[in-house]
Image (cartoon, rainbow, N blue to C red):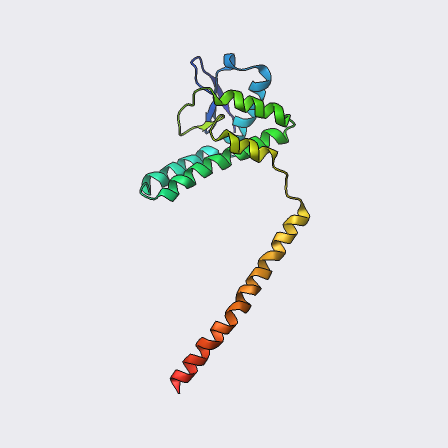
Length: 173
C-alpha cells in the first residue's frame, strides 16, 4: 500500500483519507510533522476511512435515532485512540505529544468525512493516553467473573423456574 502525501498551502489542519495524507508543513515544526505523519499513517494503514464512511452511511440511514449519532462520535473517537496509541508505541514522548495535540486543537478543522489529527474531544484522548494498561492478571479476573455471574443468574432463577414448572404440572392435571 503506497500512501501519497499532499502538501497544503492553505490554513487547513492535517488529515487523511484512505491512502492520502494532507498536511501543510509550513504550519508545523519537524518533530510535530513526524508525529502527525505517524498518526495519519496509522489511519491509512488500518483503513479508518472505511469505518468513518460506514458510520456516516449508518447515520444517513438511521438519522432519526439519537443513539446512531452517539455511535458515530464514539467510532471517530475510538479511531483517534488507536492512532494515538500507535504514535506512543513508536517511542514518542507522551507529554510532548499531548502538548502538540493541544496546540493543534486551536487550529481550524477540515472536512468531517476525513480523519482529523485534531478531532475533539481532546480531553478524552489525553485521558486515554494517560490511562494505565490492564495487566494480564486483571484480564484473567474479568474472564473468571463472567462464568460466576452467569451461574448466579441461573441460581437466582431456579426458584422462579421451579414455580412455573409446578404451575404447569398442576394445570395439566
